[in-house]
Amino acid sequence: MSDTIQETKTGEFSADVDLSCARAPVGLLAELTHRCPLQCPYCSNPVELERVNTELSTEDWKRVMREAGELGILQIHLSGGEPTARRDLEEIVEEAAKAGLYTNLITAGVLLKRERLEKLRDLGLDHVQLSIQDVDAENANRIASYKGGAEKKHEVTKWVRELDMPLTINAPIHRQNIDNLPAIIDYAVKVGAGRLEVAHIQYYAWALKNRAALMPTKEAFMKTAEIVNEAKERLKGILVIDFVVPDYYAKYPKPCMGGWGRGIINVTPSGKVLPCHAAESLPGLEFDNVRDRSLSDIWLKGQAFEKYRGTDWMKEPCKSCPRKEIDFGGCRCQAFALTGDAANTDPACSLSPMHEEWAQVATEESHTETPEFIFRRMGSTPANAG
Amino acid sequence: MSEPNTPSRLIVTGDSILKLPRHIKLRHDSGRGRWIILAPERVFEPDETSVEVLKLCDGERTVGAISAALAEQYQAPVDVITADVIDMLQDLADKGVLKS
Image (tube, rainbow over all chains, first blue to last red; front, top):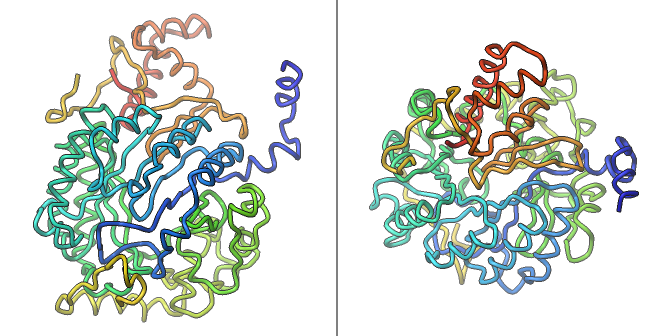
């Protein structure tokens, strides 16, 4: 034992330990299932959902947790779909906690029972992130297309507090709930959340189908920025607020995933390992599966991770841009969807030749009459509703 | 102490007795050779001094007592150290990392 300790202590840059660890992802997004009882029109899961019979087994997920711990991952985000739809969530949480991972449950809450939440806490669940669709229950239930959802979620906030667990409220913001932002902030404080995500919709996958029904005007967006800034100051030490902007109204693109293959790794319900949860929309990428290869091997050498890691793949204007290591050229999936080449600058960047035209779409759509939602119906026809 | 309906900002003074809530984890990240604080969707990387102070935030000692101990250890004026420690802890309290 003491020999081992000596060795690791002196191996500051030893090739077999630190090279992999220095590049290890800090977070793992574990999409335990694509099943979800809600039908949100801005669902961020891919348009093609993975079916229940392709999902990883309990043992597979437990192994992924152990491998994540060994790789040096610090936080695990248990997500979906709706992660509580998996009956073995307890076992996965227990294994994650044992592997030293900080465990975060990202849930819609509607399937939870108090006893189960308590059990999860006792097994080592560190944090609960609960989504809400609005504070107006009627509107919330309409958006999620789930009767009684808002009321159930409210009940969950009470259990989380009673069980002395930390709570984040995640509020996706769009033109059909944007006016309620001040009330959403008040709600987060009232239910004892320590953190609030005010997350403007990102227009990929299913959300792109509903862009015109979701896109706020630039003026409405600017107002939310003001409201959030004021609330952050007023609620210092009470509520931490994270603000995610719609990049249609931004000057620079966001550093998607903090840079490709740089800090975040994503495992799909069937075990595919992705650099970002939308990466399957890109052509020419090979996705390895945790059933065939270890997580660290995939992270370090997987073709999909190597493809856009760092800055060598860039073209102009990214290539000579002083911001290239700040925003990494934005989102590859958006660049591909709108320009046909994932190595182009994300049109969210004002330096993209497509930027003006693209930003104009948001202005136009946000000023049209709001169209009907295309809801994400689950089950029989997951891919054909649009 | 703080009820869900009456949350208030924790103001750090010399008399404060602080500790890390259960969901905040101060631990050594051996792979990267650094100390980290794990918090909801956040990882903080405290410097050496902050780590030392945080380890002393055990829910028993006052901030004043912690500062006095550090002042003696580093042979530095206690009022200077106390002010620095309070600043640092207030910043962390505002990030949700400490409770009284």
